[in-house]
Structure formats: structure tokens, C-alpha cells
Amino acid sequence: MSGQDFVSLLPLTVMASAAVLIMLAVSVRRSHLFVLLITLAGLAGAAAMLPVAAQAGPRNVTSLLVIDGYALFYTGLILAATFGVALFSFVYLRRREGQQEELYLLLLLAALGAAVMASSSHFASLFLGLELVSSSLFVLIAYPRGRVNIEAGVKYLILASVSTTFLLFGMALVYAQTGTMEFARLAALSGSWDGGGALVATGLGLMAVGLGFKLALVPFHMWAPDVYQGAPAPVTAFVATVSKVGVFALALRFFGQVGIRPHAHLFLLFTIVAVASMLAGNLLALLQDNVKRMLAYSSIAHLGYLLVAFLADGPLAVTAVTFYLSAYLATMLGAFGVLAVMPLRGGAEAEAVHDYRGLFWRRPWLAAAFAVILFSLAGIPMTAGFIGKFYLLDAGTGSSLWLLVFSMVAGSGISIYYYLRLVVMMYMRPREAGLRESASFPLAGSLALSAALGVIFWLGVYPAPFIDMIEKTANLK
Amino acid sequence: MMAAVPANYGLLLAAALFILGLAGVLVRRNVIFILLSIEIMVNASGLAFVVGGSRWRQPDGQLMFIFILAMAAVEVSLGLALVLQLYHHLKSLDIDRASSMRG
Image 1 (cartoon, helix red, strand yellow):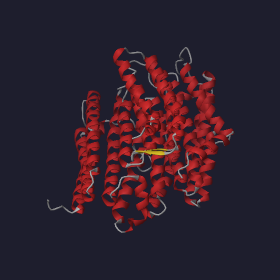
Image 2: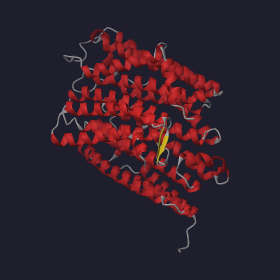
Image 3: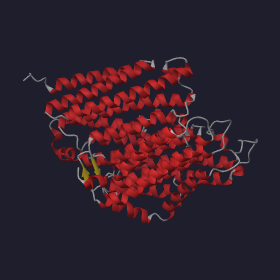
Image 4: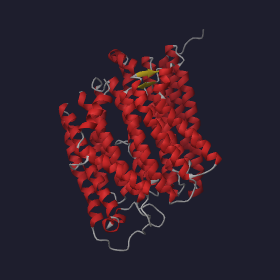
């Protein structure tokens, strides 16, 4: 490794050092605020290193990692989302008993894993990044150690481990047949698979199943509602945003290089998964009266929408996916942020739909913010979600994926019902006294929520500069 | 030089182990046995990597196996810690009783 390689790795190194620093700081003296500040400084420092690493140019750091514009862009997204999650965690944990500092340590490690996934170009780094995210999440989900938290943690542990073994076995089959674990060399061999193709085809299929589990696509989605419900709200935000962005960035790079179109069975598999995710996700969301479960099914549907552009060919596809993921990130983060700062219901999170009845009359700003977020999820104009969906549809029609485009339109139509139901609920007159008010509105929470809202409006009203940036930096060519 | 085992036999063995492990995960209701079955699946994948490495005469397969071992150790330690907590709440290791969330 040369000096330049170390410069390219600076964003990752800064994140890792912040995690080590927290470990040391906690062993000396426990202070929630101090640990939060180290976390935020580490994330901001890593973000400040992104332009430095970009100047070193796109380069392969050993055969494991490739630090190009795409990797750095997604690392930036991951850092920004983790920043928000850390702020929400601060608000969330300050109102509760128990040790608080280790959560930030695990958040940083999980973010590091997601960033490694976004920059990986080799099965080994893919696997290490994925495991860094999953093993941090096992603990994060069960963090408050209540009964539902532990249940959710155990369920995630079992299903995530099984999905990892699918991915591993798939990678092993591909490796046994091709003799290489580097994405670029696999792509170069892509033409010559037809001889011993069955093994590679099975391997790629198993890998797709493993990644599908991590993205909670139907029919590999069973863990999502329980884990979203059982995890503390800021961690749910992390599961719904950072971990999925990391895996999707990886899937886009890997399958983009290896190519889906030449493998008819993979294309069919992804099409079925996408249609099932869009329809089943939205239909099941209709039945939920727990907001966290509803958002879980809604995020399943959103990942289905993303597959439309994922399967599309052409230069627009990567831009559409990246834009939609950015919009989804800001919106989902905001949604779970609202859940994290909501007044408590007898010490527990306010997660039932009827807890939101009349929220507007008690907390007008919070209700207005949540309404905007729900509009963005539903894809109503002036919000980021609308522009994002527009781009996905554009990419889908450009490649004549009519079945997918039709399912997406139908799914979005269904989704409007359950998003608006919640909005209507918030503006109804409250029947009873409702939730106990906390005295002050937490500053950290309002900052993070306003930032998320700002991004939603900015991407919804004036997306051109952002799209320019995506096209300049995050293209895979 | 030892007589080499054909790579396909090795992969078949790994696949059989993998399916056995998967069946264990699906059939068993005791959390400890589910974790054990997952270990079998993990090691089946590791075996497939080693077979691949020996076919191409590369160290990469065994290298991946070391990564996989480390990952399995992490998973088991976290898994057992969670199982202890689960037992503390449920007074049982039956996974079907961990069903307070529905919908």
C-alpha cells in the first residue's frame, strides 16, 4: 500500500478511530454528552475527509476496496444518516434508564461496515462489511433489554445469520467455478460462464437471496416488521436507512458489473421479488395499526420500487437509484425521528396509530413535520419522494419494464391510503387527554428533524444541483 | 502428493451439510439448536470455500475460511448473550414463545 492509498482510506480510518476513542473515553469516565460529541465529531471529520479522498482519484486500495466517486458519495450518505441517528439516539436515551454510551460505539462500527460495503470490490471485503453491520445490529436492536427488544434481537440474529450463510455459500460456489473473488475479474469472465454456468447461476441466485434478506424484500421480509417494532426507534431508523443503503450500494455495484440482463433467471428472480415487494408491502401496510410496523411494510415497498431502476439498463438507472435512496434516507430518518422524539406513553414509545390522534392540536410543529414526511413517502409533489419516484418511473419506462412500472404505480396508489389515514388522524380533535407532555422540545431532535425536512423540500423543489452532483460523482462507468 | 478429491464431490458434501443445517433451523424450536444448525450452515459454506481454493490452488479459499471462523465466533458469543437474556424474560428456550409481536 502506498501513501496515496492511506489518503483514500481516510474517511474509513477516521470513523474507526472515533469508535476506538469512544471505547477509551467510556473506560475513563461515562458522560453521555461527551460521547455524543465524539461521535458527531468523528462523523463530521470523516465527511471532511471525503473531498481529500476524492482528490486522490478513483483507485483500488489493494484488491479489496475501490475508493471511487460512487463509494465516496454513498459513504457521505451513510455519514449524514448516522449523524441524524446519533442525534435522535441522544434524545431517546436521555429520557430512559440504563447505560447509554455504548450505543454510539456500535452505531459508528455499523456505519463503518456500511461504508466498507459501499466501497468493496471483493467478496472478502463485502463479507467483512456486511458482518460488521449485522453484528453491531444484533446488539443495537436488543439494546434497552426489554422483552420485545430481546425478542427482536434474537429474531434478527437468527434470520440475519441464515441469510449470511446463503450469501457465503453463493460466493463459495461462484468462487469454486471461476477461481476469483474480485468483482472486476468476475465481470471479465462473465462471457465464458456458459460452459459450467449452472454452478455460477446457483451461486449468484443464492447471493441474491442473501442480499434480498438484508434488504427485506418479499418473500425474505418476515423479520422486518418484528425487528422494526422491537428495536428502539433510533435503531429502527438505522436499520431502515444506513444498513439498507450500504447493502443496496453493494448490490448495485456487484450486479451492475456482473450484469443481470445476460442471466435470464436472475432477471426473472429480481422481477418477481420486485413485484411481490411492491404489492405485498403496500397491501400488508394497510392492515397495521402500529406505526412502526406500517413503516416496516412501507420500507419493503420502497425497496421494491428501487428494484425497478436497479433492473433498468442505461445511464439513468444509477442516477435514479442514487437519487431515490437519498430521498428515502432523509424521509425514513425523519419518520423514525418523529417516533423517537414523540412524547412517551407510560414510559414506552408512542407507536400505536391512535397515539397520533389529535397530535396537531398538542404539537403543531411535530405534526406538520410528520405530515410532510408522510407526503414524501407517498410521493406527493413538492417533496423528495415525488421526484425520486418520477426518476424511477423514467428509468423503468426507458427500459420498457412495463410489468414493474405498472406494479409501482398500483403500489403507490394503495400506499396513499395508509399514509393519509395517519395524517387525517393527526388533525382530528383529540378525544381524551392523550399522551403526557414533556416540558421542553429536545434541541438535538428538532435540529435533526429540521435538517431532514430541509432535504425533503430541497430535493422536492430544486433537485437539479443534487442530480448534477450525482451524475458527476456517483456514476459507475 | 496426495490424490486430489474431485472438486465436485467436495461441493456436493458442502451442499448436503448446508441443507442439513437449513433443515435444522426450520425444524428445531429450541434456540440453542437453531444456533447449532446455523453453525453447520456456516461451516458448510467454509468447506465450499476451501474446496474452491484447492481446485484453483489458491490460498484465498482458506483465507475466507479464517474470516468465516472469526464471524462465527462473533455470532455465537452475541447469540448466547441474547439467548441468556431471552431465557431471563421467557423462562424457556422455545422460540415459538417469543411471539409477543404480531401483525
